[in-house]
Length: 172
Ligand SMILES: [Zn+2]
Image 1 (cartoon, rainbow, N blue to C red):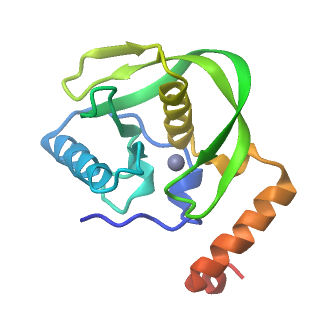
Image 2 (cartoon, rainbow, N blue to C red; image 1 turned 90 degrees about the horizontal axis):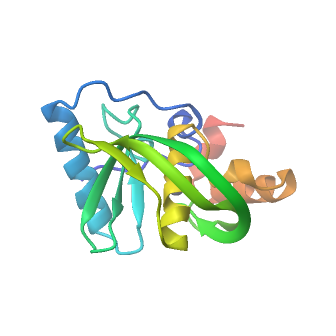
């Protein structure tokens, strides 16, 4: 089973690369991500950048469809976003931290699926809208830490650093 990268991994703060070839390795990686998501009901979606894997630089994520099955989304791009609402949100990469932050009330996201078919999705539920916005942000190198005020972010980083003692040594 793959490991999650720590909250301060550079992977989480740089833009992911476009998937240009849906190779067997990419398909297998997506299956592994889906397995990892499936192993924990609290995980609604998972982006490649959140795990340790040779292909974690790619811009792709898996999420739970409304029917409960795992779905893959490659090269997600928000092409429309409107209205902003305040939501309460957490992230697997930032254990124990959740914040109130602004999210669009409506998004339209394009990309491709694992077969290379075009995707053009306008989620109909608030949760799915939030997931699309959250995961697309991961592909841009943005976690929810970038969406909150500096004092809130600093406090969260102190808390996260305490949870992972080695992080303090690596980033004095
Ligand atoms: Zn996340």
